Length: 339
Image (cartoon, rainbow, N blue to C red; front, side, top):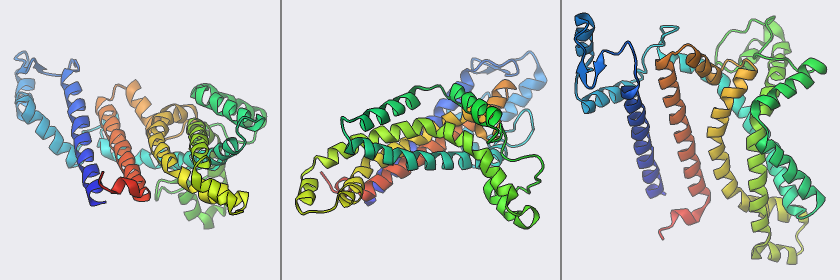
């Protein structure tokens, strides 16, 4: 297990260095009218800008500039936002709780619906149940996120008036930002609003969570079906049937427990889909997370926020995937044994 952990730490370091090197190179190649560097030399058209550029080290070698850039990143300095003049890291930490809250509930919906759907499709192979579930998951995998979100808003918000259209909570509630997670902060304001604020925040969370969960749900359901079909055809399942174990125990205890190994890997891979899907989902539902923040930064040409935001999102995806790999190695003893 120690070798697995060491290998994953090495992968983490190399991945981080690769991402930072890529972003730094793209920054150097990006044309910018405010940049006083051209082909590695300081322009002499404006002596004041040239002197400032020399002080900042932009006339140094490529390697030296990258080392300085890496030092700033590791110290938490991602630059200042052009629009707000605040540190990019502070802006990111301000918006990330909303995205994490949305991603958590989307993942919860995908797991609660996706795994049972995959099991039902596997245990009813080649029947109408299997065909129906696979057809629905195929539609969910193919449906455009923006169209699906607008359709749900039209049906449940405008036509049926069940859920709110956008935002995290109604304007009538003044919730102090303590943790950044609206459901938690609304409960912390319990004596003031009783439970009305909590249920209002929960209603705002329903539609964006469903939209964001649609694609991961389809992937998890199809992967669960594939894994369960392989497990149910194995010899130890046939032995369990011969011993007279109940159908419930064979499927949900012996079968699903062993099928979860590849499913966990798929769940980890969906983290990047959740973060990238959050960009469209948060824009549609005016959800104040990092996705909406990144879109606004692009519109305003806030390059430090764009660069820092993408770098931070990439780092989170790498950490999640490596954590999933470690969990996979922990629950699968074959990966811990030398070949």
